[in-house]
Image (tube, rainbow, N blue to C red; front, side, top):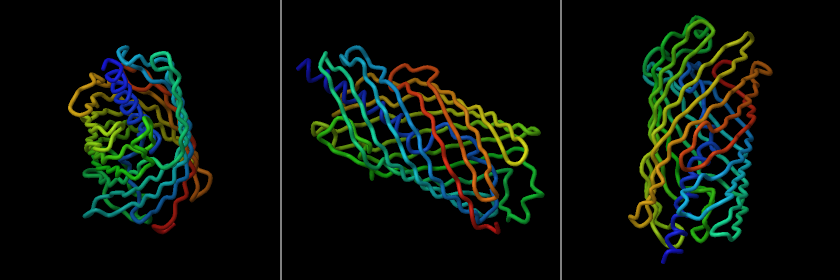
Length: 308
């Protein structure tokens, strides 16, 4: 019985860790310029790659040691800017595919996992409620940002790789919903951004071992300091703090409350009028329970339509 409880603790811990890791794999969680104004009718195609290497910070009761996770992800995304009753908005969809390798010692015995497949996709709708009216490309040169207040709602359907007979998967076999509210203030070449969000999860009723997994919401605060250089180049210092996400299996809690913070940087480089590159990297600043990891990546963006 004691060993079974340790196994359940391990299952809950790894699941909670992959939730945090997966959100970065889908679209880097430290995401600046979410609520910037964009001319209506523009389309964006994005192809990206990220490499994430990290460890699991475990509760000692799980007997889990030397746990490592490595996720290499390729992402395809599409976004379109919208006119939402006179306000600028955007819809985007992110389709990620990953290769995950993991290893750990559990009660002194080695455990390994090597799997490739789709991660749960993400669909998001955002609208700037104040300070960013819907404008055409021809009208846009006359726009000067001051304060923008925006909101978004993201949905993650359970379409990723999932095997209920395996401990670690790329998909979560459940839905998640993430409402977010953000504010952006421009001061000369500097833009300051602050956002707050909560992610809610449905239950996974086909979890490892024939059990049901439930999870409390994860709450997040994100901030960015962005500097705009000449010719469309911009750089950002990024930070985020999130907490919550305690899990339960068949109603039994695991005491795995997460309290983590991260910092990172982003650099955007226009290549031509329609093409640009984005480089990003982030690191863990503090981890109580869950995953601590380094991530770096590159994304190519092609924009078209809207009068370009």
